[in-house]
Length: 253
Image (tube, rainbow, N blue to C red; front, side, top):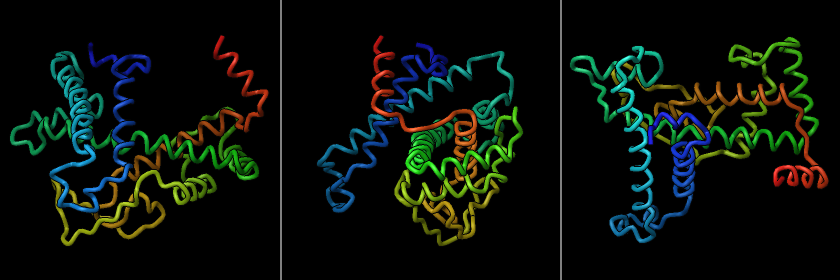
């Protein structure tokens, strides 16, 4: 099966990929005895390591298939998307980036950024539905910032101060991953870039310091843009029992 069908939600590759991502996150969130007793790590008494290795290999196979198709596509436009840009770097002489690095980079990006982003959006909507007055205040801010026929875009995020506060409070109540506490003893230079950030506890689930999650700017933009669009374009409310029953009947028909 061509990996290009990965772009279609209904494709087998897409559904398999989503299922494997869910399995990885579910496995990572389970208590694992070797985490508390490292001497048992080689024995892997619960089989967690073996299962994770299987899931990661399945994801690597998918990414490698996509990359191979892109490499073989002669008529591709150089640098047309992120993957093309990375592959262009790998073709340069004495490049520090290899195809192996690209595969594992995308593995990290998808595993770390897929369910964590969607879960945060789901929790924000849930909390707002449980607090109608906060939902109303959020929608009023959107109406004030945006014109009548305008859709939210990234440039509006800085003006949506109340929505930003809602997201931060949701992350405090429902962090989507264990708090990332890292400590770096020395400055680290990666391809000319220093991974450094001053202490900023506004997004503490992403960690803090030099080794905090590098995806904070992207996640911040995506979460706020998604929420702004969903809250501005749709009216949200908690359905009563009759509405739920009617919806179930329509779906079953």
